Amino acid sequence: MITHFLAIEVGIAPEERAEVSALKREGALLARYILRSRTIAPAALERYAAGCTRLFRDPAAEEGLAANEFVHRHPWALPFLDAAAALFHPHALLRKKLLLMLSILETMPEHAPTFAPRPRARVHLLGLLLLWVLTSVFKVSAGVVLYPFAERPSPGRRRDDT
Image (cartoon, rainbow, N blue to C red):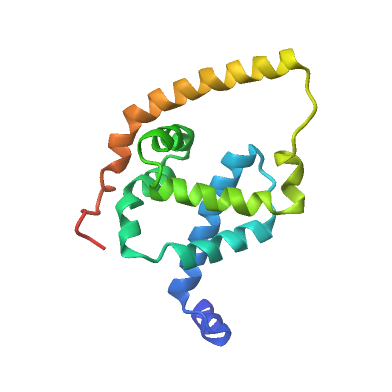
């Protein structure tokens, strides 16, 4: 009751507040994946929620909603689904949301050191490159197996429900 009153006073419907809160939680999940860190600037989550509200209102975006919901239920699957989607579904909703969060984080001074190049020896760079290739192959392989399960509608929701 109090939250309803506060929402009316501010001019935001309670449903919109719940949606913004869910988008901020989603943004935190994606930012933790991108940064590999728990510390995320609150402004990044605000920008992510605003960006999603503006960019992903199209009903055609519902197409990738099942994979997005799968990631909410199983956050451990995000790296694998991201890798598989990057190769086989580059325009998936999950990829679009990851790219939105990535672009927000790259522009924030608090997170700039994460994206700035660091001087490293060539041997170190070659070792990192080899490690990235091996982990990418593993992630894509696991993602290819997981993706069909992620694309199925969540329990209690049929494809024709909107």
